[in-house]
Image (cartoon, rainbow, N blue to C red; front, side):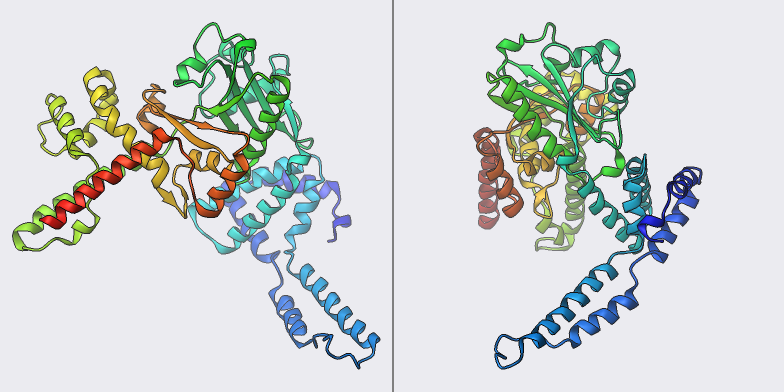
Length: 475
């Protein structure tokens, strides 16, 4: 059916029917859509062959009549147009029509959420192509020009406020008093809305107006009273949450942050610093995996030593996670926790202890602060995936043009904060005159901009590695 033939009744039946299906039947329907309504590759191959067989017009053939040249060009244009149409899958018509149908955009985001869920279970090429095509469409339909920036206040409808409570993904809103505070004096909340999904922000960001860049989340969520707005010099972004799982991979947050910076700067010229207080969700997972793998290598090496006078195969991948002084301090301060002699083993045991017991010991907190901050700096600045920061939140802010400013010890003492990052949080800074330059260098070269304090941690690691290698060569 052509676009004009698809009537609203058909689209209503399709969307209602889809919601009524079980997970398995949704999967079957999406497989049919991805396979039977895909590109006609037979037609594409025929058109490519036609294109290859066309004689290329040449300006060198000056003696040939002009109308012959025009005829050749027309054949090219016609074949190229037909090829463009043939490369559009048939489900493109369904997506386009649904986008203009009441409730259709929301339905498409739900459909894509199902697709993403299915692709996690099994990587099917046709479903992957369907997802990629739908994502491209959503990126176009959700351009910043189509979105409305809305300041969310206590006076907004209860239905909208309920969604803020439900979708807050970073620091859960505990009650109505907490919500009212986040929308009150010294605080701002902004969301992107789309006309096709009324009353529901696609993404929203929470901002605290402060005298200085906060070092703990307690300063933001629980300090009372808030900083008078006239005395604030810093706009701190402390939470950004997406409400639509089906829009994963579409960076609406980048545009939202830039718009909010422009708006705050226009309305409050005395705000000169734009920063975040951000979680580091992947740090502890990375560190625990690193410690476990190094301990396995050390164990394998000790087993091989009696049988070989040479280095072991594992030695190539061995690294000292802890520096000598850090290891001594950990061993000296944790006698009651373990009798082990290996500092990495003790550290792993402490970090995986029941109820995070190490956080209740002032002595252990003092001892672990230096190594955990140093390793966190390494994680943020050096650990990468495909040339970009391994940590998802770091990658988000760095590609938006921010720089890493400061690590904050015990900034989030919640269970989630301890489990994710050992309680450490990070400040990213958005320097208005450097945003575009930072984003370009990060995208182009994977270069991460960081403050001198952060860089010093890496310099310490580099010096330690040089000393270690020199000892190995001497040996």
